[in-house]
Length: 220
Image 1 (cartoon, helix red, strand yellow):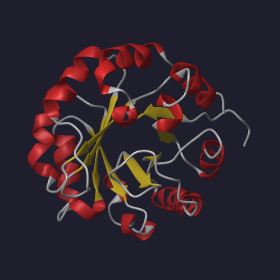
Image 2 (cartoon, helix red, strand yellow):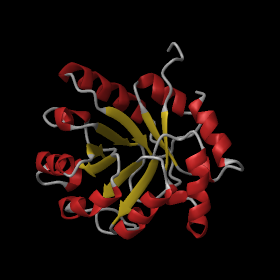
Image 3 (cartoon, helix red, strand yellow):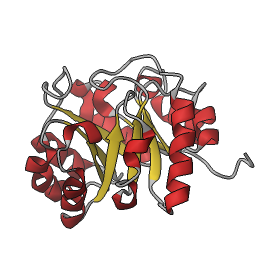
Image 4 (tube, helix red, strand yellow):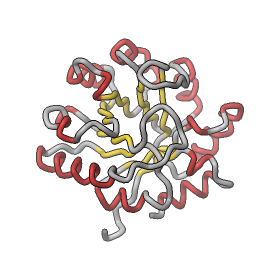
C-alpha cells in the first residue's frame, strides 16, 4: 500500500450507551467518522432486537453524518419506504433474507437511497456474480450477525480479496464494507485486502476516548 487510501469509518451505535444517545451523536458529528452505522434487528432473522424506524428518523434529525442502515430482518422490502424520510446514504439487506434480491435493491434505489447487499460469514462470494452490478455497497459480515462484541472471523481477509477481484472483473464500483470484530489491529490488513469501509463497535465505544479512537482508525 502507498498509504494514500484511507479507510472510511462507520461506528455502530448498537454498542453505545443508549441512555446517552444525544451525546453520542454530538461526539460522532464532531469526529472524523464517515458514516453512522445503524443495525436494525427483528428477533427473527437474527436472535436479537435493536431499534426501529422512529428511532432512525430521530437520529437523522440530530446528525449531519450520512447514515448507513443495515437491515437484519426478514422481508426487508416491507420497510424500505419507511426509511425514505430519514434519507440514509446506504441501505443494505441480507442476501440470505431476500427471496427476490434484485427487486429489493431496485426498491431501495427507487426510494432515493444507495443499495447494498450483505453476506453472512458462510455465504460464498460467488453469490454476488449476478447481483453485484446493481450494488453500491457489498457488506461482508466478519462475525455472525445479531450481537456486538464477537470475535473476528479470520477467513474474512480472503473473502475481502475475493470480493475485490469479483468487483473489478465485472466493473463494479461498489464499496466493500466489513462488519464485525473490527479493531485497530486488523483494520489495516482489511484495507490492504481491499476493504473501503469498516464498521466499528466496541473498538470505538468501549475506548476511553471514542473520538480519538476514530481518529486512530482514520490514520491507518
